Length: 497
Image (cartoon, rainbow, N blue to C red; front, side):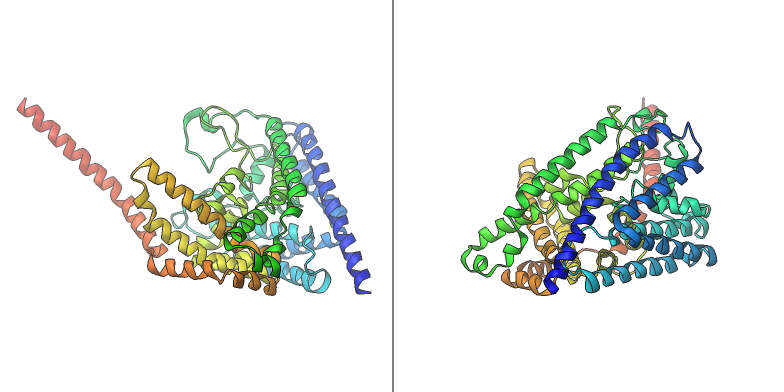
């Protein structure tokens, strides 16, 4: 009976995966039509909102059936909170309700239905919707409750000055371009895309005349970028299907493998087994990015040579991930939009222990598997150790290019092993197998990171921020003193002449 039930669950999971891929491919074709036939120059924002929302609901129903109603319930509950409560506290209430509803669905799915069936499920889209809901409410709070001088430069850009309508809200949360796999985007960026307003900003580059796109009001074609990203998707899928089964992660905890394999070979196998799990994420996230680009969303200005950039809402930079030389560099380029969300909602606003709070929020958001919590708790100590190494050791290797190269090679190897060691529980999911793996390594990375964090202290974040602010405050004064001194010297030289 249990075997039959398990087979039925497995078949249903495979069907959901097939539906997911079919929906994403159909969404890609629909996105081209949306850009060509419902361009802002040809139709109104109202029509674009309606079409994007209805298509999103259709794809959700096709892929997940009536489980898709959870998307409406979660969005509806939080919109009611936004309307009924004041802007002063609604961001807190919406964070609790959205995250609580997501956690309830994740717990019931994991412990009631299909524990361990690591496949596409209806809580995946809810994770993205949770990000959008909480980001939106914090940005409304910033724009309608806080004074402008209290905001950081990035918060000023993202701040929302008016409450969104119900249609705008559901369109933002459930549009067909991001309903299944995201990525998360800011509300202001999405509304600018729907309304066809000129690009107001580009977060990752400085204003530089016409090159940055701020003065270039053309509407570049995304076709070349979409083809490039589809090629990346195809290559990632082929690598995953052909190589993943050759290096199963579960072999890292096989008794015979641990007993008969030298430790250096275990390290190499750990790296290869975790390396081959990443292409499936590359496939899903790059395809989602291509869908948004095909609809005309994601344009981020121009490069210095005049080429259009389509990375406004990109979720990963593959080469920067594979060649990351620090834990921070890896995290900054992996699941980028989630990292932005965690930074804006938690890290920048938490007054105490923001690193620990951010990792805990990330674990809660990811789901109910114990392995997630082991991964993110390990990530805390690894992050602290990596930060201490960077602040205390890196400056000694910047004297010459050869020393810097040696440092980069060593830190690349250390970063990749630390990432693999940290993420093993994320893949194994359960406590028993995860602890078995860590015991086979004698918790060596945990112990080493704790010792590094203690032996190489780093100034607390609030003290570093004060020093930065003090430096920014003194910069104009020092500049004025330097200019006055220069003028005085010039006058003295003139008199002497």
